[in-house]
Length: 310
Image (cartoon, rainbow, N blue to C red; front, side, top):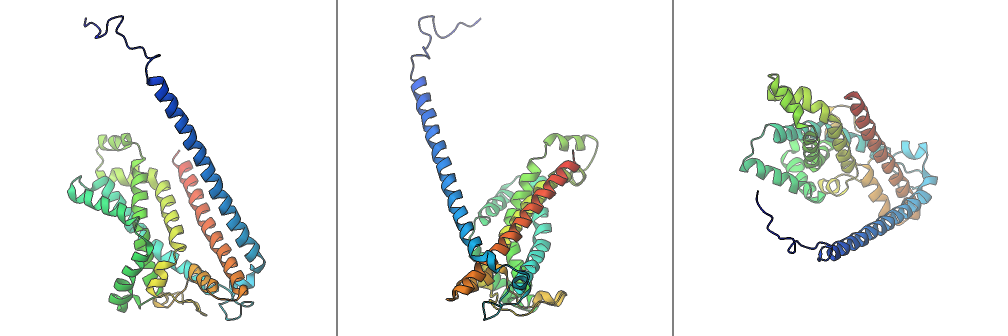
């Protein structure tokens, strides 16, 4: 038996050491930071509630079916946001169709199939950096590549150009969300699939992806919620502020001019007449309702798929 390095009289006296004072200081510091966090949260919620109250009190009286179903007008009493609402729906659909398969596929490849080498690590670092790039940079990229170089295909500053630009904007977010959802699946599920002779693709397709789909859908819808509220990239690529027509429901409609809810709100806010500011507040309420509907859809889909896999 090896003897203890300390004799009976040499054992450290924890009760009289500096351990307890340090622990007390750390506990007191944690309490201070916790209180500061609660105070900051309260202040943020208070400011948010005041902003919501101001917007709702200004724009609630303007909300009506006539406001939603009317085109923009130079007269604030008859102005509506039909073209902006339809334009946002078009952009949302185009962005989802372009970003979802590419983002999810890239996330699956990087997480499940890509080798762990320098090139893969470089891609992962760039994806993380792209998720934090300001949206105006994507607008400049969309203006040069999609609106100018690809003008014969996109038709210039069109719905397709806006959808491609917003798809690039949210693509890193979808990739990161997909990878995080795949990492949350227990590794024992993968090992069980390999143990019965399944290939890696069969394991991912039949075992891993069904378990990760709630997180993937939630991340995608939240990314689309960010895209629908973006203004800077749409202004950069040349979205119009006044459109009194609806794009046709065909492939040719993808090459038509467009506007969106954030653009219409920006146009009304820039007007000097107070009546247009009331319209802008009503437009913000409609935009928040659309975002709330999308977030609710994400929660419902997540709960549905989680119950289905139990």
